[in-house]
Image (cartoon, rainbow, N blue to C red; front, side, top):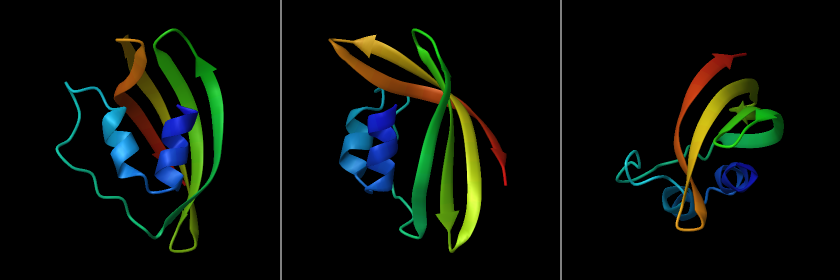
Length: 89
């Protein structure tokens, strides 16, 4: 989870796609360069889920993203499958 957050912060779409499970991975990914990720806080985790809050700025305005993400472990690697997002500002 933390590595994917870092990839978002660094606009590393290749890493994001490589760590996205093939069953749900988009064909391509474009990130908004005006989004500046500021902080990640892990709220809870279990074997295959991570609940987190991420704070970012978009065009100078703060936004809060809360998600419960689902991961799967295959071939010695963890892959992001999907997530349930609760957005608020």
